[in-house]
Amino acid sequence: MTGRLSIALRVNGQPRALEVEPRRLLADVLRRDLGLTGVHIGCEHGVCGACTVLLDGEVVRSCLMFAVQADGSEILTVEGLSVDGDLHPIQRAFVEEFGFQCGFCTPGMVLAAYRLLRETPQPSEQQIRRALAGNLCRCTGYTDILRSVQRAAALLAQQEANRAP
Ligand code: FES
Ligand code: FES
Image 1: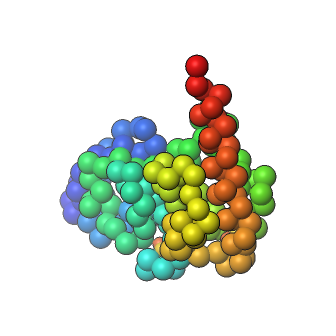
Image 2 (image 1 turned 45 degrees about the vertical axis):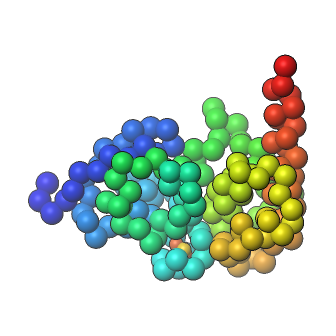
């Protein structure tokens, strides 16, 4: 198509082939073209973290990237965390610890926590604070968010222990 470029992504484990205009942001393409409305768009200039996704396993702000820059990448959005409708332990922890109020910041928080806990399964309070420092919550629920990540670490450890032979 004129003015558009072909890109291929793997999004939440599914291959996706798209034709996008080079000017379009990754956040818009994920949200509007692929219907992944867990990609929230807040500030649109890299400050709030609402649009956080994992790109090849690393936290990125999808409002700061053009979709064409993600060509060939693996993307994880919050929708990719649950399996067969069951919430991921991190999502469960946020529910159990009241880690959200309006929920606008929550997908970004959850994905930042996912990235942290993958590498640091038992993080200190300071490590959690640092990992979430780029994600803003207007509802000022930081204490409950911190507690949610601590609970998530415990739930994941329990899950691991249950899996052990
Ligand atoms: Fe991307 Fe705020 S919408 S950082
Ligand atoms: Fe409302 Fe964080 S729960 S912005």
